[in-house]
Length: 407
Image (tube, rainbow, N blue to C red; front, top):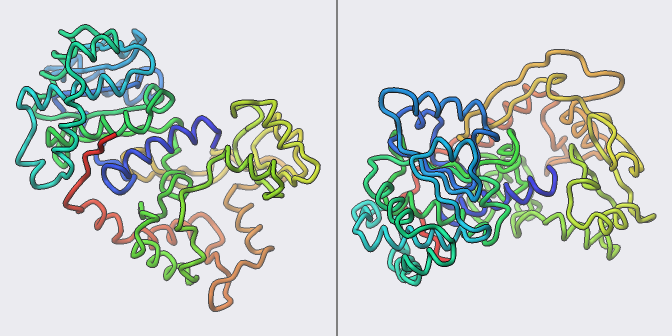
């Protein structure tokens, strides 16, 4: 995962954990087919999810089109189809979303029964957004007062709401807070857990949800929360390892911290898989200086040569998606299978084969001295994944209260 994608998925995951305690998305793509209102925040779906956008266009040009609110400084093709396009100054997403929340309180649109039964922090949030009156928000964002008020009215009156966010939120000022504000709006209005309603904190790349549910951004299999001892103890029991050997005490190490550790000599090996940090990371001169340190052993695993493979000590040729069989998860938690179409070229192997081979050579063992990895191919790995997520998702998505995040 490259630096930008890691940043984006980390922001999305953080907002979901802040509000719901887990990064599992509360919605389904089928909600598009019935929703009365769609809100796209910093998300040009017409360019980033073209198939999904076609599904929305079918609704917009059908018999009962939903209302669409687009929040984006640019007049994108998505914005051109919108019922209402709000174009805030870059970096003012949070002010705008706080202003909308303030109007939802002021106009009496809050679903008080839903909030009472399923949500906490209502009064604290109302106090915070009270500092964002209409004229003040308009001055900050350059969005006309009438348009902000219209957005609040559309949201307050719609019987169902599907909200999405993407790079315009995640790569902007106060990213996590703004993503949480999107979640807050749906919670305040009670638009979760029913057809046509949901939230998608989208991914920067098509299969990035895999990383979000496999430890890269804080969740573990089955969307386990790494701060929940019961979740992690269950995983330790399944893998037959000691609880303390699971990295449950902290968030995943940020890429910039990894670079700092390498720079300071605290980390002497780096394994890069499927990304090109000499192009994708910020401050490239520093990145190059660190990754070319003589005392760093750099392993790069990729499907083709890149600027980063050129400086690697070892290059592991990986198979591309059409050259291997495996599963991936999309943003609404649906798991898909992708079948091998052709054999990988030369000595290339699937990522899974490479990592299993490495684990065997390292002789990773469980508490009983047996191989830590109990699988040798993608089918067996998927069966193990099914075991690790069994029952956990059901528990997570029956949680009885969400948190209105106040930042």
